[in-house]
Length: 236
Ligand code: C5P
Image (cartoon, rainbow, N blue to C red):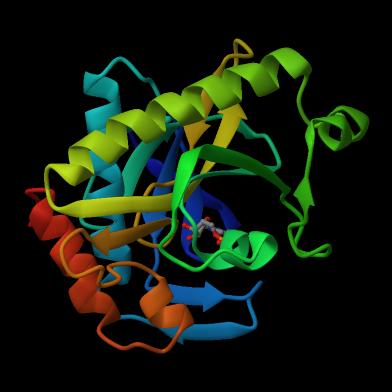
């Protein structure tokens, strides 16, 4: 497999073609952005940590029978993935009120939700990723009702697997964001990344934040928190 031209550069990752039209290389960057790109910085080591953490989560999901775009980790910063067409939805699953949900419902951060909440946001930098519902998704035509059911079922299964796995490592999975794509056969496949950039992780004992909220809220110790997550997952 040979890495070829860059196809796309996002806020946290670059995507490269390979000599196989069905495989891409994803390179994780140290860049950190928040609030739709208004806050920016570089966090030394973040790309490497997120690549390793994300790879471990995708391998865990695979071991539980949940397939994704992930093929294998190639290096400290790179993963080999299957080519998918990304569905322009950010699928957020929540177990504990935090962030925008705490604001929307007027619930204090940290209040446990009686059941997981699944939300869909329309991926659009221009619109600022608005919260949308199933009717909006049907009108926009970004996913069929069957694809949306598939996405929801997979998202809830991923929540169950990750929550149990993290709880055993003294981490609470507060909420997280997933993205899905369609492969060449039209299958809905988990894509993107699962990392402290896209999840809220709290230490189960102290409730200390071990995720990107340390960057968003200027709490410091971002790299150390990401390192702690990797360490608890058994990686190095
Ligand atoms: O900000 P909000 O509370 O809606 O975020 C919910 C979850 O989705 C958090 O874990 C956050 O890290 C993630 N998220 C993300 N990318 C976005 C928005 C939210 O990974 N653009």
